[in-house]
Image 1 (tube, helix red, strand yellow):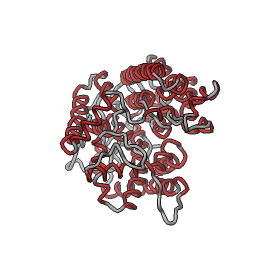
Image 2 (tube, rainbow, N blue to C red; image 1 turned 180 degrees about the vertical axis):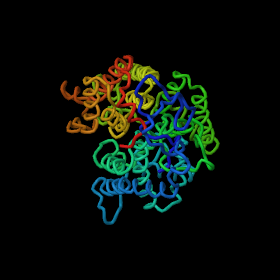
Image 3 (cartoon, one colour; image 1 turned 135 degrees about the vertical axis):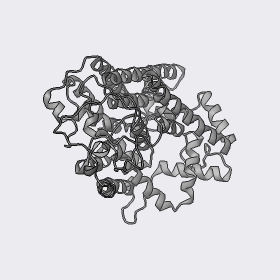
Image 4 (cartoon, rainbow, N blue to C red; image 1 turned 60 degrees about the vertical axis):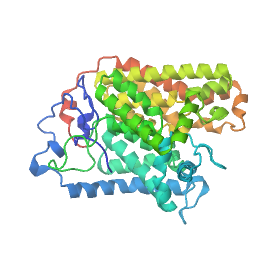
Length: 459
């Protein structure tokens, strides 16, 4: 499981006071807390004689990832009525990516695929799909599913889970948590995007011990992975604003430059496709048209158009609310960054990207995975905030609105109670952001002697 980080122990990343850790995974170090003498040290901080051997760490990491990867292969294999034997997944979105890559190779337009769902991502994403078209189809499907399992494990590892708990929780997440489960079944890329952003911006432990003489510090400059994620799908671009707001100007510049370089490469490789895509986008054409009203589009704009109609008024109000949600996400992220909880800051900003995006299908809400974990392990938060957060996470995971009739514009004929059901996800999401702003502005309680003694210990 490859991650970008500092080699610090996971518990050292749990903020317990006003101390902050500016810089991302292995980036500029901020003020560090001082663990008690009884706390064990690991990785780069450990004495030379007590550091884990790289070979043993690699074996341990592989064993930890085995169960989540098997779970991902199982979910993919059972997707949409497919059978496990023979293993032939029906990952509809991954098939669209592959068709887009083949279209580029043949000189066709990847945004006008015959007899296919539309390809909606920037041209750079289509270029990344090209190498996959050269590989055996079954290998691509298996590799994609395993990649989702690895990325899920990497996210939870960065949050602080280790060992067998990490393996079990990651596998359970793939099997049970609706956005991750459906991302695997569709062959979507949401888990990869969350992993790129989280591993880039939040410091944490390395999954595999690397000898200090080989590599210390970051593997990549902070901001590279955020820029790459934005070149693949535009919504992570909100983190450009977040980095500027918290005054990490170098990381913001790196992320923006990375996106520009990726888009420039796409322009060189496929000039006509790139120019057409960005021209349509500047004119407000997302490529979806009225399908924005589909029930599983749980963004603010989706809810607005279902209630007010797919018209000028509905679109204008939805877009205005989406801009407010994006701004609120950045503001709340800054508040929690100043509070010293970089993980929560990034997760809340990630939730805001889902609400503000014109289209956020139900399986795009992967950010509820780290949010749910933080709600489970963080202490010192008001009970009402924790309950509200769990209500949002539980609603997204259970997706009870899916019992409503949908398709063929039935969403535009909903009764009032159906409209409420269909709009509950963005309403709860906005409520969580507002509540997080209120809680984040409170001065955190001073750490107790017991909590200080726990810093650096392995659970």
